[in-house]
Image (cartoon, rainbow, N blue to C red; front, side, top):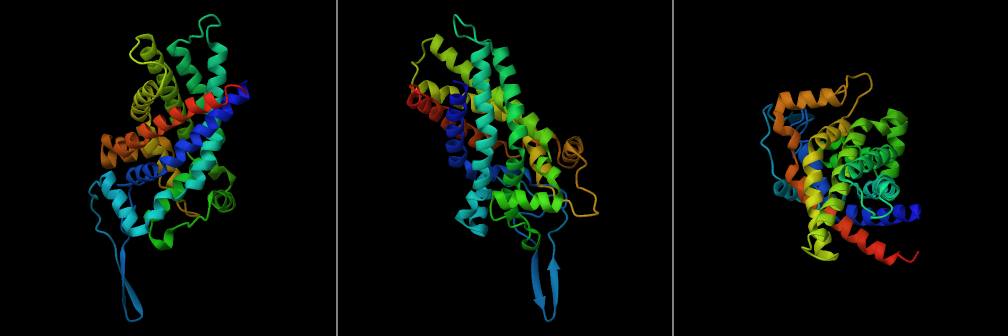
Length: 315
């Protein structure tokens, strides 16, 4: 019975993750805007003059904030349409490890803690189940999460600095060899915190909104209810998780050269430097693509989940 919840959650998560991957990639690119010493969307130009090269670096001034549409258009213009699916193999692995674990564990805890007579579970217990499930899932899926962020961000680097990972397996293997196995859990505390927030807000709020709609008789237990409850849950999750997501993305993406000081000493250092350099609202960079991705992702996730449950109800 418990294994069934993992299978259902895994199938729904992989479908949702792949279908909204381009939006997630744009979100990552936007979150990395404004980093100290980070290149703009277009790398520095190099002119050949005889035997020497003259490199013209971007001016050292704050880069204007670019919206999600502009980021997406430039991404396609500079890197091609296929770039919208950079790191999709890592997304599949991440959803297989992280989301399958969190969805299945949440289902197990929810069934275990629900009232045996009514089948109801208080909101506080739903949130508690979400926090536990999200934390465990994030710890399991962190290597794939790091690989996904790096593969999505690679195209914004100058050609000489790109990592050019061939696949998620190549990314994880090279990171382990070049930076040590511990690099696969870089930013894991942030990943766990974000996953706890997302899972608690997303899964608990979906169940709560769905119950409210059904109890008040607004709609029946069908597609309309599932879409409405899931989109509301996606908005709640986006608001709760975006600040942690920005810091997580920057910590995971930072390039640490041998013998050189890391750009950020940790999550708190990254948060402080980001706020000091760019202001508090920098923690909500990429919010539009976050909600644009979180909304459709959550809708696809739960609508697919409900359909998969119907298909597997006799198993």
